[in-house]
Image 1 (tube, rainbow, N blue to C red):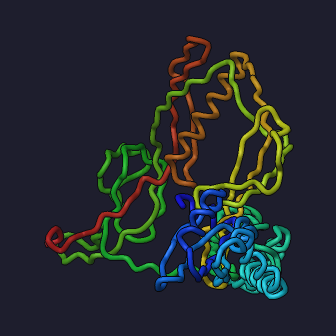
Image 2 (image 1 turned 180 degrees about the vertical axis):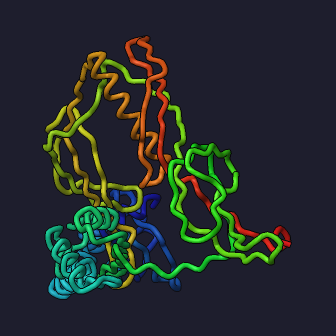
Length: 398
């Protein structure tokens, strides 16, 4: 038979035929549409062959007209396998339930380990985790992923500088760095302080070293501000690490373009969730069938790996969050556009400055309205610390 898989599904039997006139008996079976295969001879008066289960019911009818004896040696195929499974259904059900319980327990949260936090901070972290649903006994795929947990903890607890979240097996491990930790004492090697950019000196505070500039002096980039050599001329100078702050007025230019009409997207708070099981590249929807309720939306997908004991299976629970969005258009007047463009320029400049730097003055050098947008070239005056360290080498000193 060519399609032996189909014969296995429908069931087949192995038949033993013994007696005289075996060849004639096989011809009778073939003429009456009973298909046989794997015919084997065992001696002169015995053969075995396979035939379909549905045909085996009729073979005795044809055997009565001959001198052949029929016996069934083996039954195989789908119906017999199913029958054996039904006889052992209790055992199979128990094994299935046991495996399901192990699978569920392997994907639950059984521990939350927090390191690097003070008791008060750890209490705040555990409270915030409870609000997020990250608690012992909760299924892992019903919580946010580690990136989401890390982001929410950092945003919610102001005492944290950084928190790392890692899921190992059934335990969440959190490594915490708190703010206001005592600074380790710094060790300095001999150095000068030089200007990191050209500026006009507006003030200074020298902790150590010899000042070589004064207020209102103009300095170029790389110019010496505070010397690390202390001592009288003609004597062996003492080398120290020059330290302090030298404030100067520096200058920046910014170019900003802002359209009068701006299109932007916002979420209105409405959302819909869908769940699926991902097996390799195959994704099977299990909840949230049908078309989305929204006409315009953004989709955010999160995949939670399924574990069995300590092993990670190639199966994931995929959560898709569909958030409805609205597209809005805002028209700015020339005055509004100029104001917003100035604010954009300020924010862009501050990204290049230290936190303690201040914008002293700003001046619009050129304003152009072209192609439906305002174009500004702006000059900023900034007060900032321009001093940076420059090591003093022994060769230079000698």
